[in-house]
Image 1 (cartoon, rainbow, N blue to C red):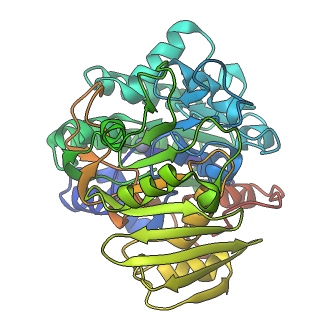
Image 2: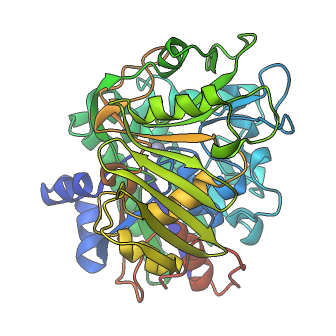
Length: 466
Ligand SMILES: [Zn+2]
């Protein structure tokens, strides 16, 4: 069996459904009629780059060293002087694969001859099978401009990606192609804008042409075609200038692009732009956890939690427990014990789960959050907030808010990155009815290995739906 994954970046399940039902995407409509359309969850942070990691490694991004589009290296181990920070939204995008935990095997390290087009995770990908691979100066620039810059040339890039993917279809056991234009257009003009539909038509045309070629080659019945996305989108009109707000509380804040500011004590690293890592007491190389913070930093946590832009604030208490604070709904703790997850209300119910939950498996924890405002929050909070490179405080934005007011290359009328349902749910369209129940984007990786008859490594964050 061969596997093809087409990723339509930033497409919500309802957007795909509407587009299919309008008749605008005939090839995807046919796939849906013969197979099925599911809704699954992405990861926190629900952002491009980090959210590609589960498809290509079967892991969540935090535990494998990629906690956000930007992060601070408090330990000064991985990033360089003087700022010790990372931002993949620029030339440092080339460092993404080096930051990925060396013990994690990518799909390209397992499947001989896999092809990746705009896959961001490229470790193990042979140069001749990589499209827009990093390494050549122009390619780096073209790639990061494509993902983070203006959208003018975007349709052209997506068509080039389609052509590249089509040139290899039928000749590889595994093909991953990502189409980033829909995300860009959504940021600039909203997910409902006509440009998003135009971008989805490129994915539809690609699926149609792939099918036709595979049918002619007699390979269609031996192909799994999965069309999915990496995060959702929601409208935003209010932009919190987080570094200025934190400075106004009496701190000196490091934030991109001004990462060479001297004598800072706090760092803000935004992703999406609806999530942010905040690092406090940054003079110390050790993570303070909530109880070890200076009095000023501890006061900052309370002030951040009270901001109207902050929906949910996460503050790790130690290596296994994270406090969850919502100004409106009070406090609770999320804790992790191996692969078991617990939720303990502490005078509040910030995730709205209605009960304390004790030692749930990853699947039971998933089901406990499935109907809530925060799908998969129990697992996603524990796995991100408790990971080594994450902030001392992690913020998830409120509806209609994000965390960047300045220095954006394009205007933002739509956003993503948070724990909220509209950012966490993504579609999964398959050309066949699945045997099992797909839940997470991390499930695609073991499922691909299973249908190819390959062993599934231990320690993955997803499980096979095949
Ligand atoms: Zn994206």
